[in-house]
Length: 310
Length: 187
View 1 (spheres, rainbow over the protein chains, first blue to last red):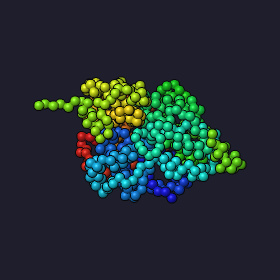
View 2: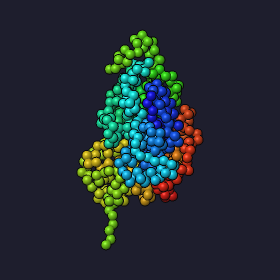
View 3: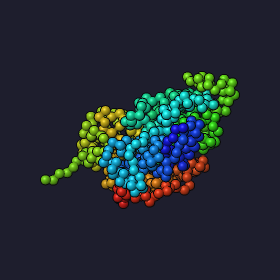
View 4: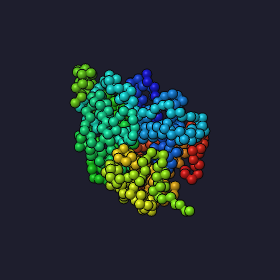
């Protein structure tokens, strides 16, 4: 059983509760123990760096120090949390002066960060530490025939990280979708930004960015967009009506977390994966799952997985 | 002898810790502008903004909406052949314009950032409804109704927390942050 210090992030307690529960459900199936970081605080998102860089590092360092006390690597399901924590850890490891200053501050909460632990994104843990073979073994109802647009988002793949994941042309998200029997469509906008908090700061700009993503997914004939980030999910799904109103489009593309798709393929009850809280109904996905059991039982789960790979 | 630091130096100093190669190494190739997903909504492209900084056009730069239109996707930083890190430059300009109170009026970004930082200072966690005033009044009555409807849509699906969450050790947390920086002027 692999253990990680789990950093849920603020949105896990509100807008992306479904990501949180589906992470825990799929993690349990895959034999991962997510130990929530005790009394974790916000990662600072982007507004903290807008105001002060050191404060931004301080916020992340507190979470890292608490995780380090437990001796566990950090895993974050959110792209922005992951990027912030990863960068803070890297900079604190590289810059002794910075580390001294931040550690002086951490003393106020009885903490210290030595830089001994790593920071990972949830999807990286699943594809690398757990591995696609182990995931395939858990698949009970391969999502055969389901066309999925794998949307990485931007901060997951950028910038300068040396963790072995290709930032220019990554394939691991697509591979993961194939492992659960789905078809990963060719989705050119998969590494483009969703607008993030620009939805507040410059609404029209962000809506245009979301529109481009939706258009790309629809042109690729995707039934559903899979995301690995709460803010991407929020912008792509919940603002879809606003995009349609602003640009006169008629998009109606469901957007689910990759953990929800994994969970469905693993035969976990939709309700346990937080499905039912969407703004755009994920009907095509649920229909695909409902269609499955008979066919899967007849063909044998392992063979169906194989057949599901284009 | 009187020495005055140039605007380009001021900004470069703010970027010192980011590991940039320096604004003066910009070759004006416009890779940043070409990769930027938000460039259509900026009044100056990132390339031009760098040229303007190097030319000392401080007032024009600070009056621009460019850096507040950056969504921090880092695509420019990962592509810049001179490792200037334009996304870090945008952060630096945001900070500079807030500290000097010189950002363009009617932009939502600065107010939103301040509210965000203040919320975290108080509770340690983010709380979305707390930021609403930053933009809800900006968009007029139509925008206000629109945002309300959006909030209700999420609330109906239990996707908005009704009460802000808090961390447990808020006192230690605040003491920690005030050791990094005296909070008065910032939060």
